Image 1 (tube, each protein chain N blue to C red):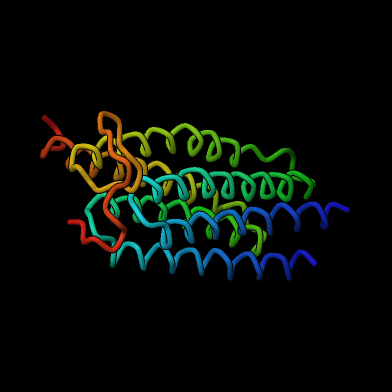
Image 2: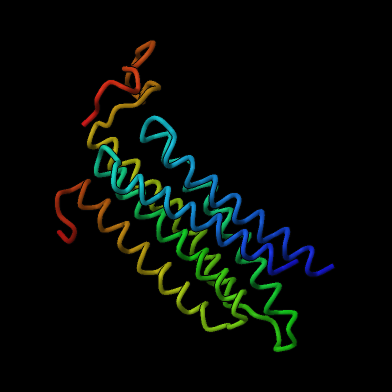
Length: 89
Length: 116
């Protein structure tokens, strides 16, 4: 049962990634694209965690933690660029 | 029993993640789109991380606390990035279907009116 649930969940998260990618490519404003990137990295964390359960390996948490850290820094930098026209003043 | 609980948590988490991205793709203006990923997706990933912590804690190698770190970090950073993006959108004066603070109008431009 767990295997079936995992495969269903992986399919759902993959569909979520595709939807975010669509918004990233289409999104009318720059803020939309940054929001889509933010959603993409959070979806990637979900995918990596699911893959870790599926493969039974605890190594994937470090990957998830690194993606969370770097993704947040990236989002803040891009939003700051939109707000101020500069990242480090 | 544990399998059932894990499957429920995993399916709920994946469903919330999907709904968040669906909202991001489908909702009509930026301020609405900001809601979906920052709330639904964060809850979904939190649920998946709880499932993962349960799974690795019950495999006989001690309690697994890595997920708590990721969960804490995500739950702290999601509101911060949402706030920054909302500020950036207000700064860019993106079109909103509802009245923004400081505006008084009955009805804004329809969603098919081309924004920037």
